[in-house]
Length: 274
Image (cartoon, rainbow, N blue to C red; front, side):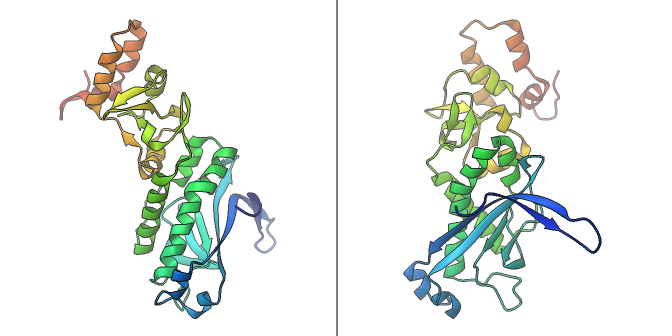
């Protein structure tokens, strides 16, 4: 990415003191492919452009990225198109005459895909260089907003980009791993890392490590779902415990495993934990 990564925007209204808002930002520029330029519906203004520019930014509060629940796509001015994620997108999109919505066409599809690729690659890597994975995943997770066709398309493009990424970005006890090489426990509980993260485990004919508890949570799981990280089913987790019992374990180990959340999840429908 190009440009400063950490910026502060100061807003002054009337006589009030200027209020700074901090952001993590990355800017990008790329040539427009010839087939996109020639595609039917590509506007004349785009046909005269050699490159398209884009920027991604996310608020930073108390030295960690946070979700922008009202994040929209900007084309110099804000549009009515939600990003569907916790970050703001600013790019040279083709908009309708009132500049509130993106036009349907090959150019916008290509540019949305380019922005999603940059988010899944340089922007994510940049955030992880500066901040812990837990807050990063939480901030970038999908938000609960009405989904337009543009929003759905952007989230789907990000899903594809994250799952194609080859550089590891999911933390485990043994270091960063790719989404295919990790799994989430059936419950949000640090025991999956602390009690089963000491060595690779097997599931579905492959070895995996549990996602670090510091990067696990309700919103973090929404982001990791986009990346293709699977959640271990309860029966597979119980088998994991059974296999682990072949090695002598102290009573406290078993006590930790039988957490109220896991007992509730293991109970038949309609029954609570004992």
